[in-house]
Image (cartoon, rainbow, N blue to C red):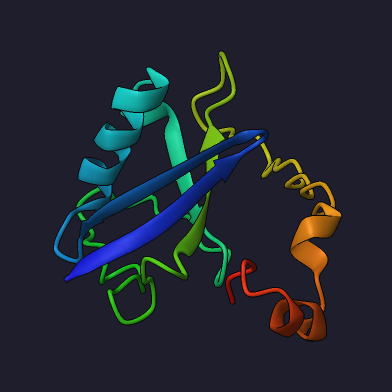
Length: 124
């Protein structure tokens, strides 16, 4: 079964899906292919538990991520942190920018139900 994940760091948001049997290392290599940061300099943290996924041999299921929990319409949130330059054991803190809010809908989309009944051209 597929596990759907939303991976966030600063203003970067990645949507990735993988099999439950995929390892953490395989997931990190997918991220490396996108971000061009070596996978050994990447740390993933599960939002729900705040636990880092440090064991590269663990499967996503071992980390608490399954298709039952992480669906396409409700992906699991993971945080992406990079290793601090020049320090083998230090990682940057979780840093995620807030998502922007969409602009208000134009008035044409805010028609009341009464207006829709009166005008057959407006689809429900």
